[in-house]
Image (cartoon, rainbow, N blue to C red; front, side, top):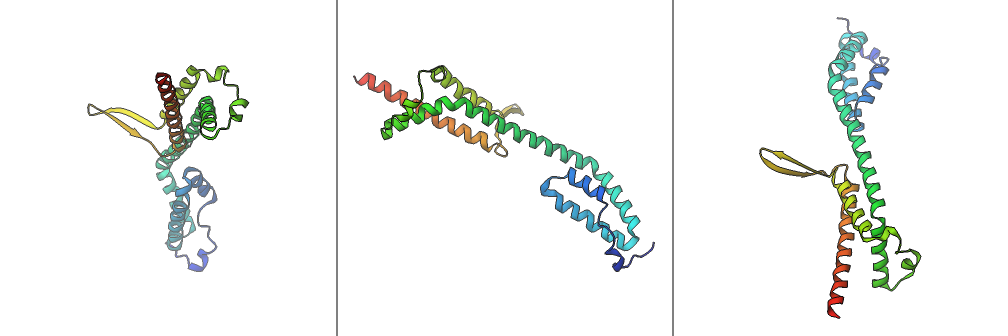
Length: 200
């Protein structure tokens, strides 16, 4: 096998450009630099021992051999991106669904706690959106939609197993926490109102 001097190595491309683009497309952003660097380093070593042609052959054979694993990784990456976007859409729909309850609670807190009634005067609470069925229904539907990507329940070895997925679900978890807070405020308000009725 012919020996390529180190001085000639400087003129050799580390990786074929098309191959580098294929690797860049298939790899996640986190892995891209390291894997391409490993391929380039190995190509450089083979080019130094056996020549540029052998390095290119090794690269394409190694890329073909690694292709199934890279495609699976790429599919997982695309699926994860889709799920992340879907989770954000569900959180946005949830925010729209809880707006009446949020407005009601903010108005109640501003008026009861700070004596500010301008917010309540600006919003017409007699509208259909502030019907108790719409308020509670919106909160319940928003919780259901946002629990879907977060909680997984399955049977495993005859037992019911539940898991909570935090990764890529921060917006959904934050919205569930906000809904819990709003539900608590509404519950406390109803409890206080009922106790006042009984006290009279």
